[in-house]
Image 1 (cartoon, rainbow, N blue to C red):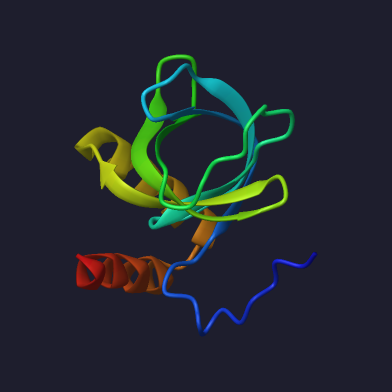
Image 2 (cartoon, rainbow, N blue to C red):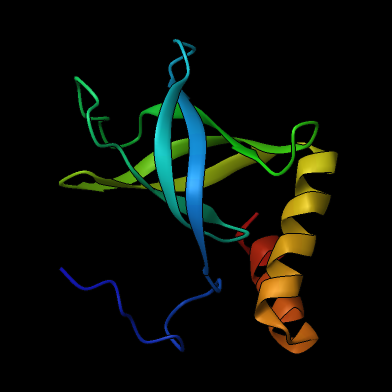
Length: 126
């Protein structure tokens, strides 16, 4: 399966972020997942080994540890499920997490114009 899509059709730029994250569905216990990519709009996770696959529109909390003391925490919902890959869309993000996510995207894009375009698209979405 390929995840390459026309970047001109995307409203938000994804950054590759290979590492662990933690997800809890419907307020349940946290489960470790693989974080594949991240954007201002959502995330793509791999749910290898989960007993039950998430359902579209199911609400969940995604926590992305940055350091021992810092993490990005976002309230999300399932946008799509393809095998073990689950696409999440952000519904809510606290201010500290938003600042950390913005900085992470900014550093990885390397282009302030692209970041500003993503931010503008985020506000148009509201």
